[in-house]
Length: 199
Image: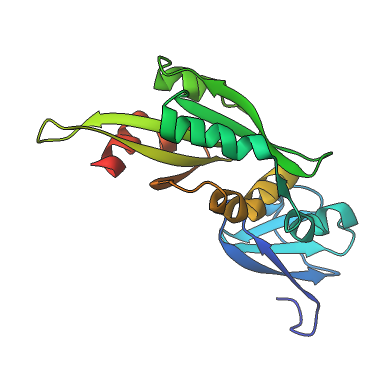
């Protein structure tokens, strides 16, 4: 393992979104199967180690995300979903040029969950909120709002890190979320997963 005197870099795990600490190291030999990119090495699910030649752009993702803004229409669109039931879902993306989260797409009240899932990109990260209607065992109609952090396994490492480190701040702006789901593939956000959480 690298010397404890090496610089420490605080990040969020691009796999699970949890807080982790990485060492900036000069040399480290690992099996080729562990190398996700020329710069990023995943030794354990929540242990990130960086080679010394990793680009400054990637190393600054964590700090840059702390200044990520939230466009006003994100909050107003969420309130339309929450209070007026105008939307079934809202999909948000990070605009890296504007350095803020923006609304990418909304779905009407009549749209299905399958249509919502199909609207998420296969190879890029997104945030989304979904207004889930269901009937309780007592035959009462209810709804719960889910926040979904979509981070497919084939998306860019930079995107995974950027969305993971910006998530908590963005979600804090959306008052009224009942449940959160972090998904890396469609099975982790299947409709049955929502039903299990809501009941």
